Length: 178
Image (cartoon, rainbow, N blue to C red; front, side, top):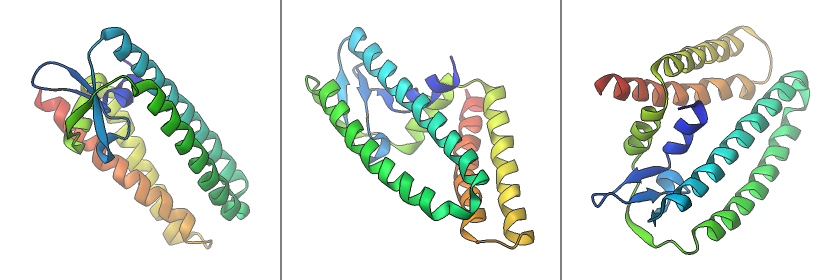
């Protein structure tokens, strides 16, 4: 399984009856019961495609942000607008793709999401991602301590990659437990 399969699997879980449950908003919303394999595959393809689009969009934006560092407030405004538009589009797309699915009782917990995601990732990739996260935390700390610039910019990698390091560390731990 690939990296994007791991991201996708974090939104699914199996219930006690063996049905697959889909949580389009992750731990923040309720889920849907998927009874057929074709519907499950359709939803997985949709979520995987969305994950790829988001990752590449964020990557291009971060590279652009570094290049145009003096204009970071405009990037934040742009991304807030893009986030609102994307969230609206995602909401409509999820409504359409889940309109014939019954609601699931219960919620997806963060530990379930991370464990399901960890199952599809391979251990070397998780370790590499953990090292990258720690590296970006160190870069953020270095920028914060030794560069004279706006303090908001260095705090982003410290906070974001700090949370990533915690989540990935938990996935590594879960993977080693199995």
